[in-house]
Amino acid sequence: MNFKPYSSTLLTVCGIILMGIGLYFALIRPELLPEDFRYMVLSPEQLQVTAPGLLNWLDKVFWVMGCYVFTTGLLTSYLAQTAFRDRRRGILSVVGLAGVFSIGLMVFINFLIDSDFKWPLVIIAAFWLTAMGLFLRQK
Image (cartoon, rainbow, N blue to C red; front, side, top):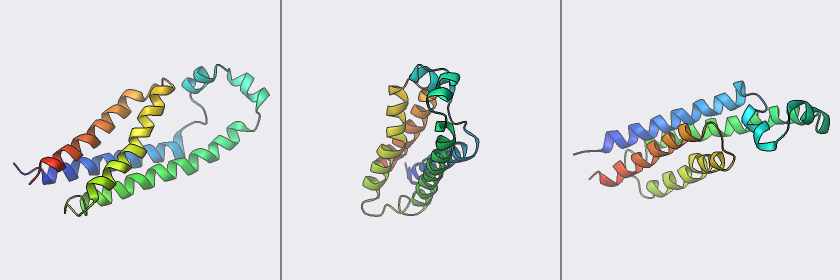
C-alpha cells in the first residue's frame, strides 16, 4: 500500500493545526488562563498587586510566541507538501526534530503544569508521530 499521500497529508494537517494554535496565542488567548492561576497558586488580584505590569508584558510575549508557532506550522505544512512528500534526504530527521521541539515540548510542559489542554495536544502529537510512521512504511 502506498502511504505517501497519507503521510504528507497528515503532516500538513499538523502544520495547519499549529498555525491555528499560533493565531490563538497571538490574537485571542488571554494573558493568563484559570489554569495558570491554579499553577501559580495566586488569585488575579494578588498577581495585580505583586506584579502590576506582568499582564501587559505577557500580552506581548504571546504575540511573539504565537507568531513563532504559526511560522512553525506554516513551514511544517510546506515541508509536508514538498520535501516530505518527495522523500528528500534528511527530511525525516528534520520533521522528527521539529516535532520534538514544537508539539513534543508543548505536550511535555502542558503535562508538567497539569494544563487543561494536555490531552488535545497529545492527539496532535500522535498525528505527527503517525505521519512519520506512515512515511517509514511507504516504499
